Length: 313
Ligand SMILES: Nc1ncnc2c1ncn2[C@@H]1O[C@H](COP(=O)(O)OP(=O)(O)OP(=O)(O)O)[C@@H](O)[C@H]1O
Ligand SMILES: [Mg+2]
Image 1 (tube, rainbow, N blue to C red):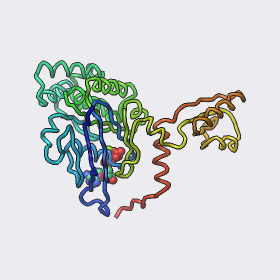
Image 2: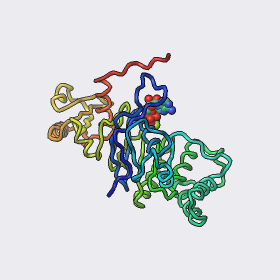
Image 3: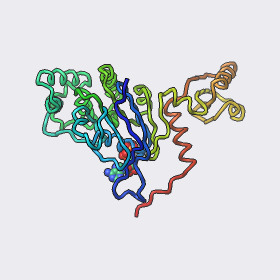
Image 4: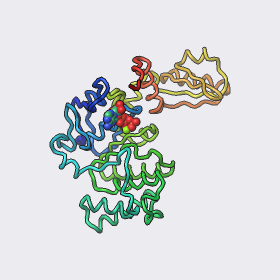
């Protein structure tokens, strides 16, 4: 296996940024090919900035980045032919209908008419867009427009797909159809760089993940690596009443509707679950979710170093 994207001390400062603050700082990442790589982080963390630099839509300030072995600063053309993007904000061509917009996109990428037609049909089927195929894109709802964009990119033959929040605004069924299409792209040995605020989605799809916080990489690895980095890798939910002081001897406790949630180490979590079961309480025990990790890591960094308040000048 090789690397699809590599960055070395990558930095981006937008012109006119307040106090010259960087949107990306010292980012060194190796993204393996043929997998889904997830990038997560709060609003403004630098996810889109990173994607846009890798997709050659935005210039870096310093450091370097290569995509499929090509330098983003000097070999944009070679890169652009081999990638496709679902941008965070976009307006597909409004005067075309759904089928035309996907078909034309594939034709423009250089696929022959027969193959473009087959791929268009497959993508529309897969994302349940066939019934809308003759509808003008201008008349679609926001979520359907987003699905059309996903269909265009997933139907392409690009080797790297940049998906910036592809499922934002999609209904739960459409989201899962996009997941399936992403999995299919991976079976075709393509690489996907995915950003999302749905951490269940990041966890379900990504082989490796990067957590950005204020332009910096704060955590990177497989979901298991990330789990191993947190103090309490297990969560125990207990429905019913147990004195808080007693629970606190096992780990970190928070109150939830009808009971308590305890984050604990493995041995303590088992012991706690056994104790609660013996008292006849309903219990669930499992590894922490990516969302738990996110809240712990990002929550702590907010406590450690409260950023200066945003003031409008
Ligand atoms: N065109 C721009 N000009 C100036 N500053 C920008 C521009 N685009 C983004 N920024 C700033 O760069 C930082 C990173 O923004 P970016 O859009 O990369 O974040 P993000 O992680 O994608 O956030 P979100 O989850 O909201 O999409 C933010 O502080 C943002 O205000
Ligand atoms: Mg973004």
